[in-house]
Image (tube, rainbow, N blue to C red):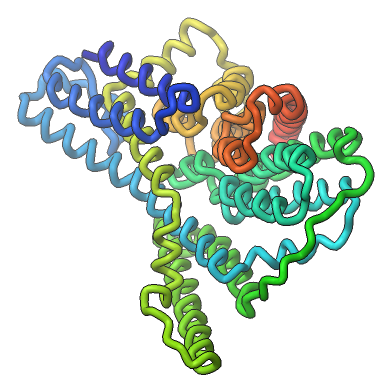
Length: 463
């Protein structure tokens, strides 16, 4: 039965990686393999020799001696445990996505667009790279990429030049997301799973992440597409919302507040995110009602009530396919973890491959294994890779292993355009060809990845 479950996972995983080839959204195989895996576990519960105790984080020694009803009860408790942990991540992401949509509702990101007053291609490159790096640490790399490419489309006319900028935005956004607990889904998973803390994540990964962004940007600034001046788009005559700047800084500040809330209260991050969403929503509703009231007075017309709520509109625009994909993949990996399969794989690495090294902090997975994880995240989705690592390894909070995994999984995906959520969304928005990116941008991402990894190996010796 274990073999069948592994095959279900492998075929589901393959369908996810071939999403663009088979023309099936990746959320579908993720949900299917999750449901089938747990169904097979339920049907064959008496045949499994071992079980992972989620509460004690150890393999149960006497699982085979339990009766059928006890095993079923244990499976239900385990399923509920994993659903709860997964829901923490999903609710957190939904809150962050809604805040970003509220900011966009008030045209808050127009403040960034208005900052571009120059035509130098090199200056615009550095501006967008730095913005991608900073914004992705606050609003996550996927959202930062969507925002910046949307702004870029309103500024740069020539698409052939614009896709070069998009490529560097992907690299910078993924680098910026690696050092922030709210910057990348995989880093958020490690943070919520109590594998990394906010302070140590910043301490270990900020400098490597900066180098991962700066090195490719420096190299790109000497390339032909970034020399000379640009022909910019004419500014549109659309009036700016008077609350745009206020909602931009309020929304970003509310998201940044979440890690501090967790440190102070020791509550799960999603609680702080819901508080932040509630505060931003209060101001959004006040500003929305005020705006429509003024509109009615000035123009003597009524506005239908379904347009009054900025919050309802923002909730309807969040990426539910992404949320369901994360649900499917995380719960599917949880099935493998519950059967002890991931631990068997980890033991295989330790005993047969011999790629473990001894560090001052203890025995951890060698740098080569983690670097391979980064390369693997460029080929296949980094979410299941990190989810698997959570089940494979039992190192303590803030062990160097977890920080290196956060860096490798977060930045390694930049090497292929399909290797990260930021790359996939940029591919869709600008219709970037896979092989064009492979030829023009991948080498820049690889150089940045290696430079940042080398920086991490050096800086970790200082702390």
